[in-house]
Image (tube, rainbow, N blue to C red; front, side, top):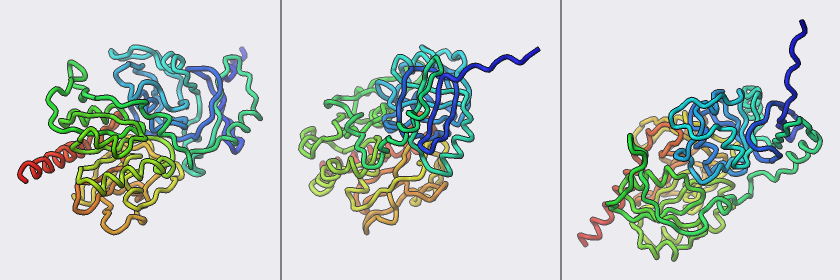
Length: 391
């Protein structure tokens, strides 16, 4: 008896070096180009796909069980998926979770995102580790018809993330208020109805759970677009300024963000707190430099050491650029460092309540070892308010 004929591949991932990975497509059909990265998180694929920091990237998931709990509206970190596509080892199984509202494949299809399953993600991840994040083209055709030369050419023509200001593509169109707090059993997301501090959050691609953490720390949050000016911020008379995460090259976004941040630092004594791209923006404003990483940090298991306390925190990360710790000028202190590769993960301005971290203390997905940073931000605003009241 002859062996059954294997199914014809319905998806193809083409790398700029000519490497090809075939598999079975799911989600939307069509073709897209992007930078390819890998994420080592074991949970939170929906949060990852909707994290605005993944704009311009296709995500390879190293954990094989992707799609097994389905999707639901509560776990979106922004309105729609931002990552260009996903690569997984096993095709998603039928969802098995009481919170499931829509299978992953249907969720992706309804949002125009392409995915490929049945790929040797170990081999692919090793290639990314050794050669750096490649430019790729991903195609899904139910008939399995692919223009291979065209796909490789499309991958090679992708401009890459260096020099790209993607924050403008994912930021909010206009300002808005945020009062939803962190999820709590059994009622879900409660509302912050007794805020103690007024915070302006500059949206370079903010995750919803960051805003929830600010609200849970007692903040009334007003979110402004990435291009907000110093005057736009001060019109809200904030007690503190928050700089959000986001995608793309920090040097490109910095052309308009850095002057605003410098003006806040020069003209006020407001506490300033930044995460991810916001961390990089603050470093640039203080005189530091940023660099493109080989394959970046993407996962929920990254150990980071806090130099101030000696404590090691397990953190969630998602970044392809990093602050050059050697470039920090006098008076700007390196506070956190990755124990994977020694790259910078935190800074603070000596003598002032101004600091930032590269990792994600809000998690979603990931551990919550660093959540105290939101409380530290609230304490800094309270201390400033007390000094003003006593004056």
